[in-house]
Figure (cartoon, one colour):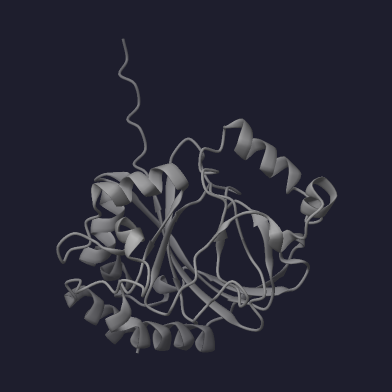
Length: 258
C-alpha cells in the first residue's frame, strides 16, 4: 500500500489548492504558483518573517492513500514510545524514517509539490533528512525543534496532520517571529518555556492561553515551518497522527585555502 501511494505521488503534478472558506484576506497563505508547488514571493516573505506557512489542500487528492500507508507502517514496524516533560509525561509513539520503510520512498521527495516548496525556501541543493511519523496521546507544551539540529543552517518541515484539527483538538500553534531564534524575544521565550509550568509562573496564564497563531487543518493540508519556531498543541486527545518530511539548507562550502 505504501509503495503504491509513493508511486502515485511521483506522478502527481499538483492540482488546485483549496482556499479556506472566509479567508480571502489570507490569499498569500493559500495558493501556490502553477502546478508544481513553487511558492509566491508573498508566501516566501510570510514564511521567512513569521516562521511558518499553511498550504491548504496541497495533498488533498492523495491523503487517503498517504494515511493508509502511514497506518501500514505503524502496524508493521516497531515504534519508540516516549514520555517527556514537554508532552506532560504522556505517551507519544514515533517512527524515525517512516517513509524510508518503503524502497520507493525517495520518490516522494521528488514530488513537484515538495520540490517546489522546499526549493522556494531553502534554494537548490538542499539536503533531505529522515522523515518521521508520530502518534500523539498527549499535549505538547511550548518548545522549538532545535534538539540535535544544526542551527547554523535553516531546517524546514512539511507536516501533514492526518486528522481534522481545531484549536480545541490539537491543531499546532505557532508563536510568530520566533524563527529568529537569536533575537531577545525568542531567547526570552525559550528561557521562560524551559519548564512546562513556565507560562503560568512567569505570565500568570495557562499554557494554552499564550498568544499564538493556531493553524487549524484538514487532512491534505500541508503545514510548512521552520524548526526554530516555538510551537505547541493542546487538546489533541488520543492518537493524533502526524507525518513530517524534513529538510536542511545546503551546507556552506569550506573556505578556500589562502
